[in-house]
Image (cartoon, rainbow, N blue to C red):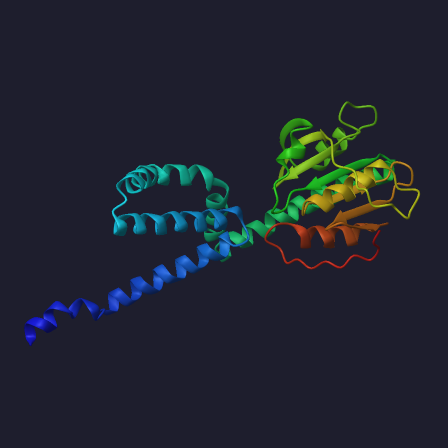
Length: 266
């Protein structure tokens, strides 16, 4: 009887086994949360299907299919690192967001907001047209590639210089990724939605168009009226005061609470 008990003893986990199981379960759950609604989840389901086919091939002794799948799985880890690189980078970034790191991130966000608001205030007072797009969760590389690469730290002076009248990059959009100006003079898609306010021109149509195709936060300074407008989620608020702009920026930056309510829509 004792011999039989010893054979099945491994089925009774110890406290260290329970801790390991709990850690693995939590990590798996967090990874699935990070990957949900992304293309990585679809690929994982595809890999699971291939795994099922491999099991069936072994059970039915389909040597050709088994050999092909074994070869595929042998190099699958390297392929997964390449294919899932954006998702893995985002997952590692989120896992590293401790409370202290988030506190420093909020401090950096306030500096970024101050620089952008100061630049918008100067542009509005000078009656200089401008369009500034801030990347959120969805990448804007496709649109940044249409402009000129800048790769400079966001500052009020840099933004006002870019939009100086008659400069080569004046008519395009500035795309900001994090706290870096990624590109200037970028071309954005124009919305097909009719604008009720006839004073809004091409910049407003481009801002609204980008907000319809991405989750970017787009600021427009009208050259004709000096009004500040904000587009996000396919909606636009016109005549935004500086305090309101600051509030919206603080709520739209990655890692901040969402749910802003627009006062005016098109």
